[in-house]
Length: 620
Image 1 (cartoon, rainbow, N blue to C red):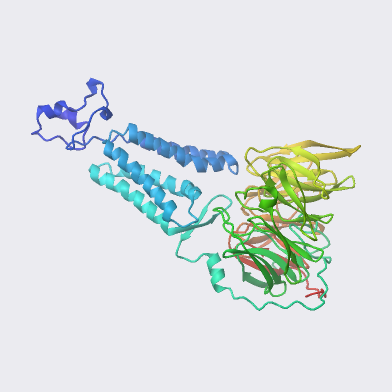
Image 2 (cartoon, rainbow, N blue to C red; image 1 turned 90 degrees about the vertical axis):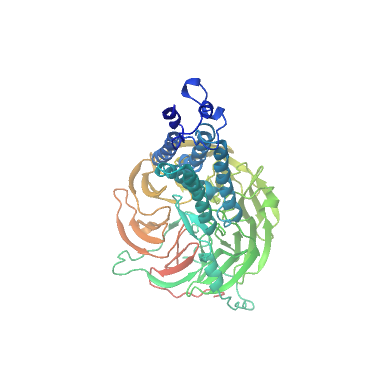
């Protein structure tokens, strides 16, 4: 009888135990499970551990396999997010109903687990939200729980139970002491101790406010000149530069650093007019539009508004790039504030609340639409019900129209002229829509819906009537052909490929080929059929700019490296590379007036690429 009882206990039963006590214990022959009977305090049952081990092995195995097979897709992200949740629910089910432990242990351990997770969310840093807990803390806690029970098998149950609780406490303690400073394009976490100042805090602590430069009396307004870069992705919003040549032997003639400075968080790029450069930054609780001197990097003026947007992937800061038009600067804040400023001195001309005008909600990743000005109308994505895009009078800020059905987009509008008709294109989760600037009328609407997904890149023009609609997460890129006859517009799909998947990183079109990002791969794709020619690693989720006259690609990597690559469909050939700035770099590069401007959420830099030419600019 004592041998039979020992199968269900951690220790042999005392020899003095009475037969009456033995008769109260479950026996395999009576068909009753351990959960059916109360267990005397003096008897400890043996933990049935193998189901927990199987659950953890399956969790990691399935998630790893999905990430390898579906790399760069929404399926990969969903596996990372929901894999630990499903695994933890399975562990709880095993623990509560099949572990063979006392009910006190079955209830106390999950309660301690829940308390630990709750403590992280309540007293942890603001950046450690539910997403960070699910992606990072939950799988660690679940795995450590099971691993500890395996390695502590020879120990008594009180020690093993205390070890499980200690794991929860230590994990909870760690995640309440750290800060999440965003993730990479592959969702690797940037975790730092919360008492160590962040790059944003260092910037704010070290920043000295310069004496504003008084505007000149009767100064002429700034005027766009050849070589300037007035808006997001350049004069035609296509990241394509013509009329410029640069040295390609960077070993002999390397780009020359003119200045480098710290900047506030922000994920937009620069607008450049003469020697003035404009960008947007987060300054503590304010969104700032800043004008820097392109020669020195020193501030000329800045404009601040109370607004702060942050999320766990990129972090804080505005997402859009200023637009220069007719002496004015148009900016879009991440929280939904549209501004018109005087480009010379920064004084505010008008402002609008996009959320109010479009009856819209703040998007998950903030507003990222860089304003587009056409036919005297400034347009941005808004995402409201039947108010996908809003249009305002560029001079006065008067609300003029709202139109379109696309509710999910982080793209900017793109100019296009088809059959002599000027229009503004917007890529959304519904597809590609063309708006008439003067009144917002929808001219044509190509449907390519994503379930709950958004598009982030602009439509790329191929000739006068074809457009590339790029989509991340392995949804691919589609070539759309548009025709206009008898006041009727027709659109049709020419091909769709999964060989290039631009998400928030870019692509350019050159001589019958597409060059751009397929998740973390930089690739060349044929325009006729959408088939890839070559792929290259080493850039992460970066950005690209085309120097068309020299058949060159300037690529900025996610780590702030700048590479010069031949736009050659036959092979990948890199001509030079250097570390331009440090830190996660998702921002678009700019080449204006012979200079390269790069920035990220930490610093900005200017490099001379060509021989400097002296030019007089009004207001400089």
